[in-house]
Length: 148
Image (cartoon, rainbow, N blue to C red):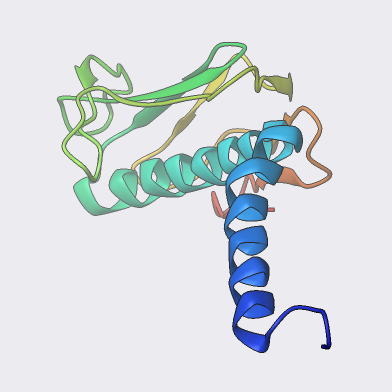
């Protein structure tokens, strides 16, 4: 009599092996790189939102950084006022609009903070770098364009 596995038994073993691989492998692979890239992308989106809000509401929007967070505030009065004295509500309703790093992600290099004018411009070009991410976020001075 022939010994061995049937086709159904082999398929079941392959399916069980696949399920275990999906559940177990991510625990052995670090997620820090994913957290760092996500923090980079969220910072990029926050800066774009701040610049677009400054233009749309014709108000100054101030952006401040800590080692692992960025916060945006808006001026309550029209120009020439540049005092950012009101929390800026985020697109998801969070108030103030703050992006905070997950895990141990931090900025490798950041400015102390800067202001988007009512025209969406910044006084000087800015660069922001999240640690362990090869891409740098740049804010252009003349236009306020935010890109990586």
